[in-house]
Amino acid sequence: MGFLHKLLKKLGLVKTKVGLLILGLSNSGKSTVVARLTKEPVEDVAPTVGFAVESVKIEGLAVTMFDMSGNQRYHELWQHYYKDTTAIMFVLDSADRARFAEADAVLQEVLHAETLKRVPMLFLCNKMDLALAASPDEVAQALHLPAASAARAFQLQPCSALEGKGIKEGTQWLLDHV
Image 1 (cartoon, rainbow, N blue to C red):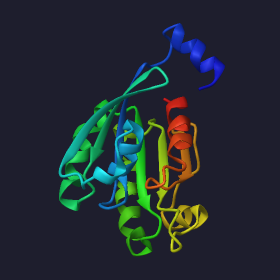
Image 2: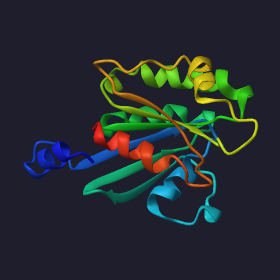
Image 3: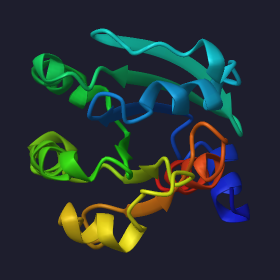
């Protein structure tokens, strides 16, 4: 966290509580990302049914993570958490190219949700440790990822949740933009 952000936080001019909505298709690695952030063993991770809520302190911020199931039947549930969301983490299996169009459709709905228009978004290109993983540039094109705008801060971050690579850097960026 930058010096200015720390100073503003001490002065009470920035948020100290973050509602982090973690979205993506099923089997993209959302729960493994949460396990990395909560320092739980990744070997014990099971797919989320419905949703799971975890709380963690990261650099003085109280972060409540809403790990939403990526199963299509639960997508309508996501919108009930939008009002408490101050940051979004969208996780994609970069090696599952066959589902890029489905991920794009889901992502576009999230991007166009009125209550989320100004919420910063971290897009995690997960499973970059696999040989079949698409490059971040390929992912950005396939999913029509927007450039950062005045309304929304946006970051694309390659990662491997299984290996724990890229998650800390991406999360740091996201928390710096809430």
